[in-house]
Every structure is written in structure tokens, then in C-alpha cells.
Length: 143
Image 1 (cartoon, rainbow, N blue to C red):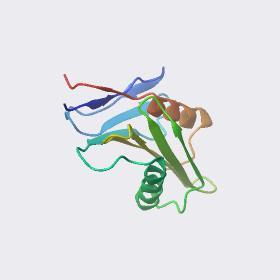
Image 2: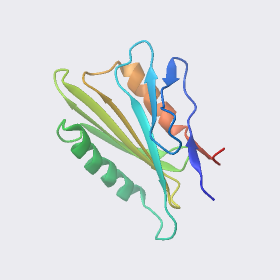
Image 3: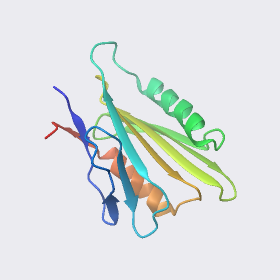
């Protein structure tokens, strides 16, 4: 059965996903609109279970390639509603770029990939809220 992520936004966040079923979902926080929070997903069948360490390594590699902000300045992993997550933050001082990447997995073949990027350092509340949104993603059947 195909599943997709369900995102519950916090107050002030808006969905600006273009009408593209199965495409990347995009969200912004008003009024700052520092940068997009983008979510995509992959469901695979078969194969070995996925470890939290391998998810963290994938996040680090992707973030270094995607953002061009140098090596990760912070990395973390832990539990989330979906199962477990890994995240890494990237930035260049003093205020040149900021990127954060998350990889979530249920450990059984469903992955959510999320990025938040900004040309400048966002407000700490925006970064915190983006993390909360990502960590509360659930799975639903497509309508």
C-alpha cells in the first residue's frame, strides 16, 4: 500500500505546494518567509532494515552537497512520530547562508527527506518550529 507524509503546520506557516501530486511539498513561515521548508518522500520495498547511523550519514552527505555552506555545524538524531530522524545544520558566518536537512525513517522502507534553506540566518524560532513540524510528520493513505 502506498503511503504519503501528512504534515501538520504550526500557526503562521503556510502551504505553498504547487498542485503536483507526489511532488515536493513546500511551506513558509509568515511574515518572515526566510526560506522554504521542503518535504519529499520515498517508499521502498524489500531490503534490510535501516539503521539510525546510516540515516545520519545520508543527511550529512546530502547537506554538504546541497547547500554549499561547508561541513555540518551541528548534527543530531533521535525519535520522532514516524520512527527516527537524523538532522544536520550548515551555515557560513556571519550571515551568508543557512541550511538544514532531515532524513526520517520508519525503519521499514519509508523515508521522508526535508530541507530548510535560507540565504541568511533565520530567526531561532523559525528553525525550532521547522524541526517541530518535521518531527510530527505522520503517514496517511493518499486520497
